[in-house]
Image 1 (tube, helix red, strand yellow):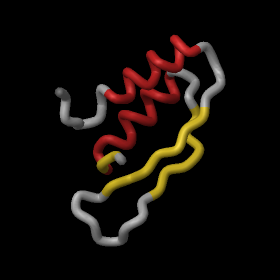
Image 2 (cartoon, helix red, strand yellow):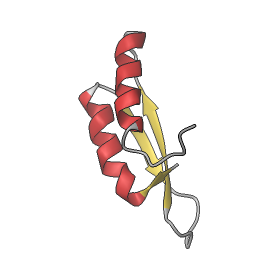
Image 3 (cartoon, rainbow, N blue to C red):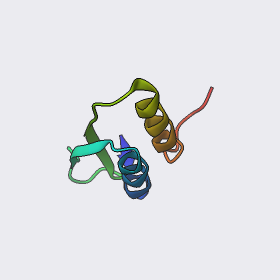
Amino acid sequence: MLTASEVNPVVRALRSHDIEITALHNHMLDEEPRLFFMHLWANDEVSKLARGLEEALRHVNRKRE
């Protein structure tokens, strides 16, 4: 799940690594913060995909252990 402010930076990071966003949607009408679900698709070398996903995750505010 992504917050609204995370969507565009994540999209840019994924697209820069040739990872396609196939859907972006939310399920709730009035949730706060507004949360989005992103579906993606890619078919490439594993290391290239891993770099793209790693870059995208840098733009997500997540708990790091």
